[in-house]
Structure formats: structure tokens, C-alpha cells
Amino acid sequence: MSSLNLSLTLLLALTCLPGLRAQSADLPPGPGQAKMKTACLECHDSGIIVQQRLAKAAWTKEVDKMIKWGAVVDPGDRDTFIEYLSANFPADKEPYVAPRTATAKKK
Image (cartoon, rainbow, N blue to C red; front, side, top):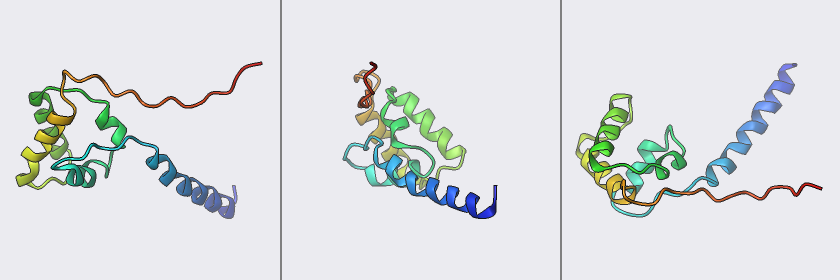
């Protein structure tokens, strides 16, 4: 593949990425939402967060694990993250179901 073709392919792929991110599920409003977007969506699509249903202890372990793995979370915000996740994605809440996309009809 020529370098021009490779460059055009990469450019096309990069222009599609914002559209893919725009289709992901939104994080619910609330204290901590903006910081969650900044810290978590740096590496993850929001869909991976909204599909989770965990107890507060499990969210605590998850937040601590992500911090250990390099998530940029101010130590003073740790509890805000845990409270936000526990309130919006508790273990006893129905799981998130992603909207279905239209499929072509078979003939």
C-alpha cells in the first residue's frame, strides 16, 4: 500500500471515530459526571460504564483498580466517583440495554 493510500485510509478512519463516540450511551447527570467523563472516557466508551451494575463495595474496588492502572483521579475526588457510580449503577438496578439498530430484511 502506498503511503498516500495509507494516509487516506487513516484519515478516513479518524473522521469516523467522533461519530462512533457520539452513538455511545450518555452518563447520567449528577455530582461527579463531568469528572467521570474526563477521567473515564479518556480510555473507555461510556457504554462500558453504563452497562455495569455493582454494589458500592465493588465500585470502590473498580475505582481503586482504575486509579492503580493510571486513571487520572484527584485523591479528593475518589469518593465522589464511588458515590456517583453507586447511585447511578447499583447492583439492584435493571441492566442497561443498548438501543437496537435496524437490520436489513431478508428476502
